[in-house]
Length: 375
Image 1 (spheres, rainbow, N blue to C red):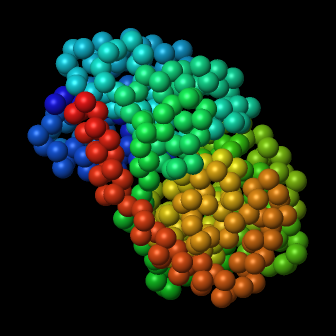
Image 2 (cartoon, rainbow, N blue to C red):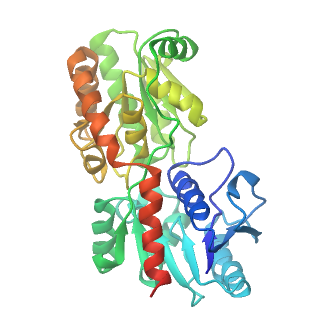
Image 3 (tube, rainbow, N blue to C red):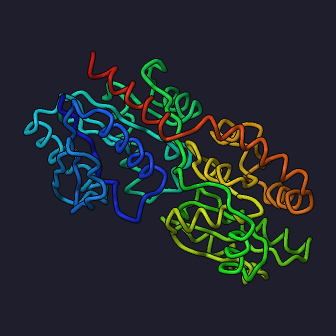
């Protein structure tokens, strides 16, 4: 079979949630299925590290699709044309975008549809594109793959899709995320926080990640405890970061907040492993990979009681109301003051994390692909 894949999101040193899903699943699927030909479709020059096996043919077509007008042209013109040229049997899109102008069978991986619930979090052009096209992509797809039961039911309800046509394929965690030794933890604290304990947040700095409320909660925590504890924020800004800037500027303890930008998995592993807890409190999430990454590093987790996060964290996290700054601050206080609670969460995390791996993700994803190939 000729399997075409939208790989425009595979960008060296710029992988986030959807990018990691794409990388980890396609690597395993292509290597495990040498009987098929894979055509990876990029919108710009690609890095050779993304060509995982000999049965992959990379194709670069323009224009670079990073704007709603270019999204439309790339998928409706360029992708449609190349699918015909390579005689594709199926088109797989790990970021959910499809071509409406092709008759080739398709699978859309729709991780979440936060743009339907929180449209003001997105630039106007992007929001309008998503709200117009994604319901159409969902109906066009032969099957939809998503990353949680929450997202499955949300997509089915919002887009009037039969739930049986949606497969849940949980995310995994990079194998590099493992517990750190005491010596490694000390070195990490020395490097980043002047030997002080810290909370960590990991994620793109966009409105739904709720970093503004996290900063405000940390300010309350600092006022109450008078501790030397720091807050390390890992991630690059995505868009609409005015609230984050305003919350940061209001802080009297802003010198205790450390912005690292995007980090490599190796450096992120070090920071997870030495943290007092992950403070990951978005108000909307399709899955929340940092929850599993932290658990794999034996780090306690504070997360939101909203959308998919209770499903992913199980009983192995301290849950907060992401809309309540006091709720987040109180959870920080509990983690800081109660060593036994931290230990309990870590032990539960060791059990919960076993539900998730990229091997399991790739296996389930391939089963969805096979369903469409065999139709």
